[in-house]
Image 1 (cartoon, each protein chain N blue to C red):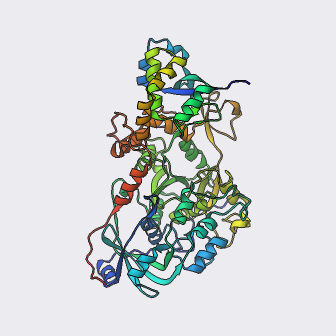
Image 2 (cartoon, rainbow over the protein chains, first blue to last red):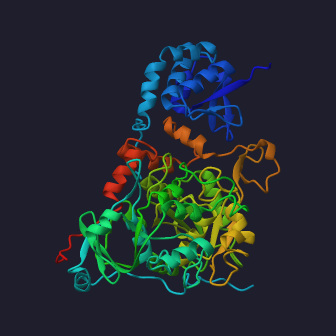
Image 3 (tube, rainbow over the protein chains, first blue to last red):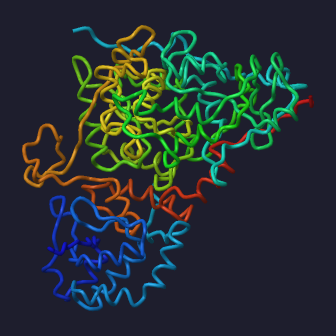
Length: 124
Length: 454
């Protein structure tokens, strides 16, 4: 039986781009929308994506085989480990799973509170 | 070619049931039995507040409807989508209360009931008829079934559909009759900036010289795909593109995951304030309505509201006002192209007697083409295999992660409007806490008004 591969897209804004500077991950960036959206794409073996889906019932696999609707806490932890390990490999998700209980606690609170970004909105 | 002009209100005249003279208002309210308006609840969360319907009726958005419908009118609407006066109308609108409240009020036909909101007199209801409803039956017939409406209904409506649940959660006793607002509510910031009831909106069109205007329905913060839709749909018109684009947001209880109403209004306003569409050609307004997500049925209400506001055209997209896959994704466009006989339309609603005058503009999608290097219309661009869609869930994911969306997806100032209200509510989207706070505060405050007790 052929094993499926799924993907997780990690979107990068300026601060995240800054965080991966010098890690070698810059070369793995892919772009969308004329280069204005940059992302790192992680490959996720089927058995790992099943594990992720089991932990987060709202998550789903979309028509592009991307895991979507993942909790923000999970995506933030994933990016942090990508930076720490300078890798998009399997060890990143393994490291995230080490903290899965903590992440699930944060994810549970996400329907109540998500910290807003610290940007100036005074012109609105 | 005949030049288009502002269409007449649906039904011929704009309803205006707001008493602005305080003495007259007090006389109307004095001595009445009073009732504090209660929200419709589902699992402890408010999903509708009838005050929004009363406002939209009394200020003329839903003309020619002027009150809570009598039983025969509800039946006619459900069977043929027409009022007893023959004019097309999509939804039953009723003032529903519990058996216990009905018993304790002790009112009946011929009585006047004072409706209080936030502890103050708000409106009166002159009761013409009292009758009972079966909320499940009303809910089912409002939205249709695959058996009765096979042209567009794909699966039975269920508890996951927010509009269906509004009707299902109604109380069983209906007090039918005309509403009159006796104490005008004052809109709070930011709603006050966008309050243009139909009569005022028509005046604004005149001042702006908007002979033609196209309506844009929204329950969303605009991304650049919406902006492209507005700009391009406005090229319809007569001998020239439409002179105006009227954004009319639906404000009320919404489903979880939608954006807060304040962010929707200020997000759209940012489009013109910061020049992406110049304000001379773009205007942001709202209608109070707890959205029913009724796709083709909702599109009829949208057509009526915007015709009453003075629009000549209305843009309708795929999955218009839809949630889930209950309806065919093109149901609204089918209605406005050839009609849906099982819902009472052998022809489009603007081609039937007592129908609408507003002209539909059915639109497909806009997406980014990396080859053309711009936002393109799906039916025009030849590089379909390269399309990059601006999906709502993609953008919501970006927003939730706190990632500043690039200008090609969402204008910086629009995103800042989201963050501004995110800071207020601690959450970028509608959640149960937001709905509870919204129902407590509403969009309005009511001035104190003394009336003698009944």
